[in-house]
Length: 527
Image (cartoon, rainbow, N blue to C red):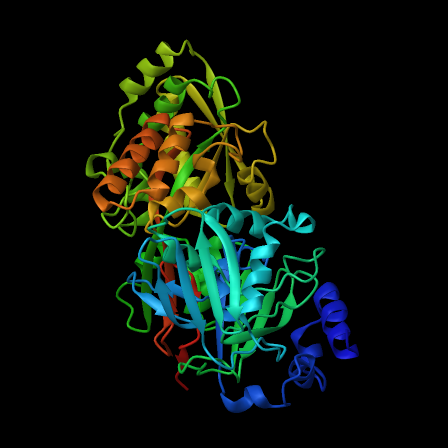
């Protein structure tokens, strides 16, 4: 490690120096020098876009697919191919590809002269090495590695016939093989002790590279002068600011402190709909749900879990919390584009307190207290809780609303506390192929399910659906999986969850991919 690199990783990242310290005579030059780039190279483009979100950085590993990481991945990292917000396939690191007629392999040709942020060339061997991370014992506990390992279960091998050719081979026909690569960001996990990049700067191939990270405050990304796509960055700097309270995020774009935010407070968004100084880019993909701890009585009883679902007035939640921005759903596959979509399941288990009361009686439960944790970063979850609390009281159930910080909420959602009752949570990939949805969201299936929910029928159907090439037969399999998911109520769907980006009209060109991850590579800002 050079002295420059050591300064950045130790002094800046761990001690949290201020932006002024970094820029005062050293920071600007150090950013370029640390990655072997010519001084001033990033100054080829000018301007800064300031962006903000609520929460904290828990990882910069693009494989982890969590929280604020969604809005950093596409700035630093690239993929072979990916699907844009319209579901169209986009060539990224690969300039071409060939899918085998029997769906057992895909061959990719890499773009020439692509380099990592530190100047090293990107080669096919990098992808072989990345696939090797999935079986590396030293990385067995890494969250990102485990998520990609689950998604890549059908992948038998990744090989490099030559320096510019990546061959992805499957253990059996995989009709959705190209969709798997949507998650395979090019990343180097060279330090098993810091796979989340909290103590070192990530190295990717994306349109921006990180130069600063102050935990709990901000991260700064500068334009990559050697970016491989024609749509090179149009601004010199993208700065990602963090805020503790989700309810206050929007104030920062309205006041002009930042140029854009990801807002979770739809009540405040309502007031901006007619304001010509701003625009709202709404990107669907996810749902809010209630994870139920099925290992804890009485939630191990199906009738109790179904009672919880029937006792939710989802329409009231939508009206009170979302002002028309979101819609109530009882199924994760709420859009016809999803393989497992079934129209009648979207509105299943409609609000019915008498039905809920009868189900509790059937289960032999006459007194029930439920603890519901709600995080500061998303005030909508508290709104759900207050409405639900009042309705549950009508059937003799007590809902105890527990305010928790975001770290505690994430721990609960990860299943680290098996004593909890329920956890409101969000899952994505609802618009992706349903095989990927189930592969990436382990809370819907056995083995690694965080609260012990295992349904053997789900596992059998998933194996069948993963290799079925006939589109009609595949759809039927995933529709049955949808029915089981809705009826079992181990995860009770509540509401669609769109990403709602609020931008000053000065900002042009930000985009998202199919999983609603922000991409600023084509963004610009007017003076």
